[in-house]
Image 1 (cartoon, rainbow, N blue to C red):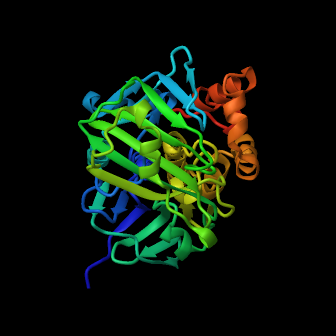
Image 2 (image 1 turned 135 degrees about the vertical axis):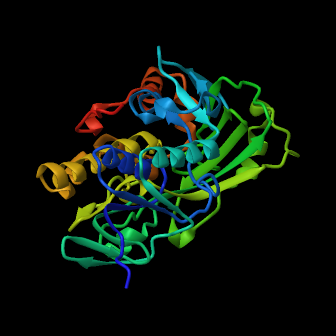
Length: 372
């Protein structure tokens, strides 16, 4: 009988957190395998692909192909009655992306760093073994990392924490379309269309992305009325209602902060699987990349340098989101349209909006990344 392959790390999921973990570990010389259920990493996406300045400058994402990104330096915030507040911060920006191209580029980076990427192979099951895990149809490993999304199978099979609270989002992409104001990220507050979250429009390298998300209640689930939202905002966006989207993305977005049992007995969660997504903005790319990178580095330090257990390092590296979790609770309990219409141009609301969109507060994170 042929010997089953052995890896230092097997990672389920080839999105931002999984790729960061894999490359961080591979750079230390570990043998890493990444499982990706899709044959094409750029298909059936759930992420908006909007990258904040910190991720664009402080991580490997600073090497993205220039034709895959578009710089946006302003935010236009709209009240339920479509009053507008323009927000900027000196030197701050976002990158909208050709997200399928970005995901394929990330896969190419795995190959360049010597990581074994198995496309079309989902994580199915694993059982404990001495010193690690035996992963079905893959091989054995010292560490198993779940970067497999909000409904993580690694979490379920390994007895780790599950994400319990979600937003549900839908995003359309209109290839070749142009916004009336293409140099801003447009965000809309509306309890009617987006209870618990917002709607958004952005110009990306390929066209326009338009999305809507709301608080997900499994007992009374409802789909975002994105077509009604498009009609409501037509005068601002300039998008013809007859235009049909070329791509539709939909999925659950964690919104309650890190799961309680994030790591245990050589199994670790990261990214959406770990709930590492801002409870307020639902932004997760920078936090996911940072945490995944730290997990890979911690595993390498433990296996190669007799460092402390990687499980505790992964738990310690997770952002706590204390303030944002409080804001999430308040938004869920007390969201009303009239205060936003009334106070949109007030100094307190402007301060809050600028803080949420432009300032990366280290109070929510214990560490600063040291990445190329």
